[in-house]
View (cartoon, one colour):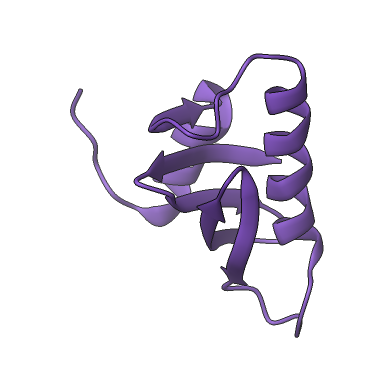
Length: 92
C-alpha cells in the first residue's frame, strides 16, 4: 500500500505501508527503474519495491503518469496515517 511517491530529475522516493512503513528509493532512466533500495529487512527484491514498480508501470500505461516528468503522488489516507505513525507534525 503506497502512501507517497515523488520523482524529481529521475530520482524517486516512496513510502510503502507493510508491517511497518518502509522507504523505497529508486532511480528512473528512460521510463525504467534502473536502481532501487528498500529499507525493509528483506534482502534483494522485496514486495515494497515491486509495489512501486507495478504502480508506476500501470499508471504510465494508462496515461495517468508521465515518467519523464517530475511528479508527486499522495494517497491522503495512508499519508496522514504514516505521518501519525512517525510521530511528526505537519502543517499544510
